[in-house]
Length: 285
Image 1 (cartoon, rainbow, N blue to C red):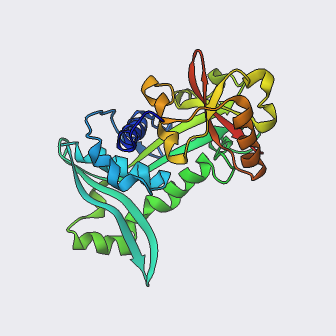
Image 2 (image 1 turned 135 degrees about the horizontal axis):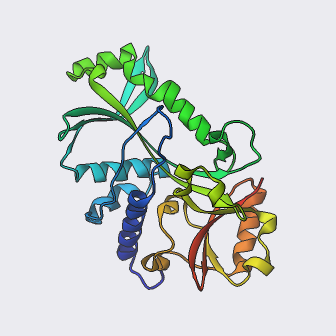
């Protein structure tokens, strides 16, 4: 990073984030609850399109921004609406992420988009989806799917939404509903990935450990960085991305991790060894 001009750094960072978004796998429903919308890996993007709006966006909004850039390059899709606010009696009832027309098959689509990072905790009781939790244990895959099933997708058929769509000359009954859930999953350090359900294995991006397990004996020879949350999208195992980060030794990073975990925050680390670079969540719980 120190050898790059600021504009060059921002260009490389934006491209790395965008490609990380595109290349992240999709959570695929194993049942009949959701049809899936797939964002194909496409590198045909000019970095200049990414720079101006991304600096102050949170991760979820950055994913939405990248989705729109990808969509603009797809001739098969026509955008009807994005982030359509549904209002009722002066309050916001919800939002429809995307209404699209797919030209090849002559289909109308209601697409809900999400990008999630979940950690597998086998000790959590309940459904399989409940065991995939957010880094700080504030959410889970089960809660996200429930919200989609019970609120976000049914929003299309509320009277308030129907009224808005009629003004756009759209009939909600003609729309197929599809979920685009891109995700990076993490398992306990010594967990056997083959024990996961098959459609979950491809989403595994790294491991997680408790801070107390982050020891000099095991990790002392590696170097680390704690990326900004928007940089969680970046694939650290690409040589071109190494220059985007300031790498620190075990002692320097351990001190930062101690402060973060004592504040009940679970940071993502990129860890570099002679054999490559990997992702590692350090949890406080």
